[in-house]
Amino acid sequence: MFRLFNKKNKLVKLRRRGESTKYGVAAANVKELLSKGCSILKVPLKGSRVCLYEDGTEVGDDYFRRLPDNVELVLLTEGQCWDGFASDISLLLGSTNRHYDLLIKSAKSLLTDEQSQKKRKILSDLLQNLEDNSESEKREEDSDWFQGIDPRFKTKSDYMKYNCESRVRGYLKEVDGYTPNIQSPRVRTEYKKVVTNMLEKLKVTKYNGCYFDRRQESDCMCSREGWFSCQGAFDQDSCSSLHSINPYGNRESRILFSTWNLDHVIEKKRTIIPTLVDALGHRSHGEINWEYFYRLLFTRENLKLVHIVCHKKTVHDLACDSGKIYKKVKKRK
DNA sequence: TATTTCGGGAACACCTTGGG
DNA sequence: CCCAAGGTGTTCCCGAAATA
Image 1 (tube, rainbow, N blue to C red):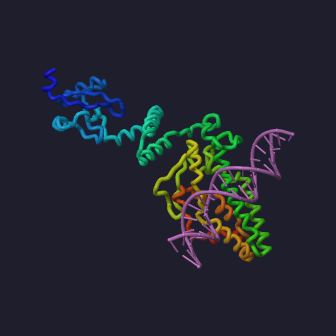
Image 2 (cartoon, rainbow, N blue to C red):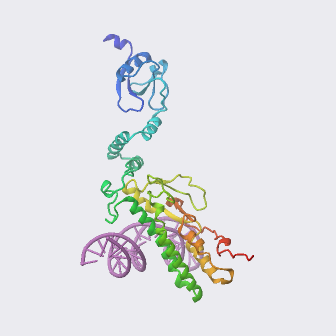
Image 3 (cartoon, chains in turn green, purple, cyan):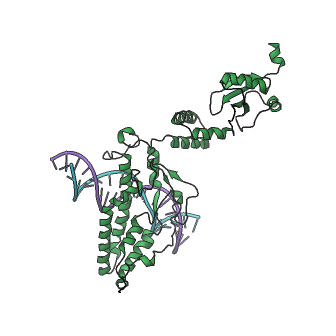
C-alpha cells in the first residue's frame, strides 16, 4: 500500500485508437503505463506509445509527470498514429454501418439534453446526414420517406422522376401562357406552332424526368445513390460551398430538395421567350430554329441545378446565341 | 367502371427594382 | 425608408382525361 503512494502513481483514462471504451490505469511512469495498458487493452507491447486523446501529443516521462489526473490518453500500437479527436471524426466517417449506428445513437442521446442552440444544430445536422436510407427504393422499404406522397408512387425514383417532369411541364406552361401577349396574329400563330412542336418533343423525352431519376444511366443529374451537387450560380463555373443533397436519403432531404432550383442560365422570361417572339417577327431572316429554344428552355444545356443560396434572382444579362436562332440556310451549289 | 395520370389554378417563398 | 410590382422558382389540390 505504502509503496503505491511512494511511487506517486498517476491516474489516467486509457483507450485504444478509434474506440470509446476507457479504462482507468494507474502508473508511475510511461513504461509502467505501457506495460499495464497493453495488458489491459490486450495489445502487443512492442512499439507501443501513448498520446493525448485531445490533440495527439505523444507522452514522454517528463510530460507524463506533469499531466493532471484522469487525463484522457490513447494507446497506440506500432505503426498507428493519432491526430487528436479529429482522428475520431475521420475514423467514424470512414467506417462501417455498425459505427454509424453507434454514432446515431450517441448523437441522439446527446441531443436530448443539449441546451446550446449551436450544438443542437450541429448534432441535428449530423443526424440528418447519418440517417440515410438512400439504398432503399420501394415504398415498403422506407415508408417514412413516402409520408404525404400519393400512393400511386411505388418507388423513390418514380416520385423523383415525376417531380422533375412537373417542373419541366411548368416551364412549358409559362411559355404557352405568353401567347396572349403577342400582338401580331401571324406571329401568334407561329408561336403556337412552336409551342406544339416543343410539347411533342417533351412527350418523346418524357419531360426530361430522367434528370432526377437515379436509375437512369445517362443524362441523370445525380449519382447512382442519389447525390446531387450544386452546379454553382449561373455566372460561376462551380459551387464554392460544395452544396450537395441526397433527396433519396430521408424524408427531410426530400422536402429540402424542393428548395433547390433548376435555374435557367439564359433566363426564360426575360430573355428566351422575348427573343423567340422577336425572331418569329422577322420572317425574312429564315426559318426559326425552335430546337435551339427547346434546348434553352427544357434541357441541361441551359439548366443548372442550384442550392437556393446559389440561385441568383438578379438579371442574368445573357443573350441567346444569335447564330443559332434561325436554321442554317443551305448554300446553293 | 375504376383507377391512374395529367394539367390548370391558387398559394407560397424569396429576391430585386424602383417610386413615393 | 417602406412597400408594391414583378421576377426567380416551388408545392398542393382537384377535376378531367387517359388507361386498365
